[in-house]
Amino acid sequence: LPICSVFPFMKNVADSMDFDSSLQRLLMRVSQAAAELQQYCMQNACKDALLVGVPAGSNPFREPRSCALL
Image 1 (tube, rainbow, N blue to C red):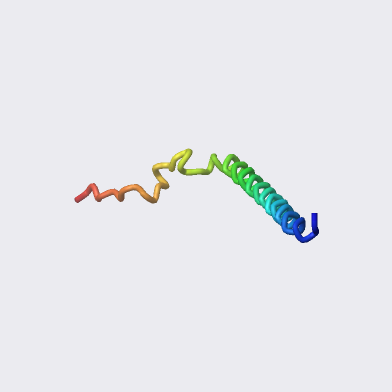
Image 2: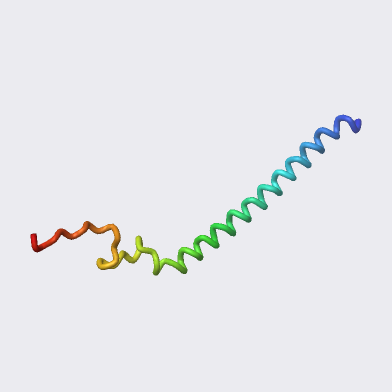
């Protein structure tokens, strides 16, 4: 086979391998970020107001009380 017909094929193979390797690096970063996020959530679950609730006395979103004297 002449070199001019093999070169485009080899370039496509090299480009494909480069894309695959960059995709693998991206997936590893996403997997690591997901694992770190999961670990953070598990460590801070006891402080999460959506999971444990808000104490009634310190809830800034409760309805204000009306004056009982009037």
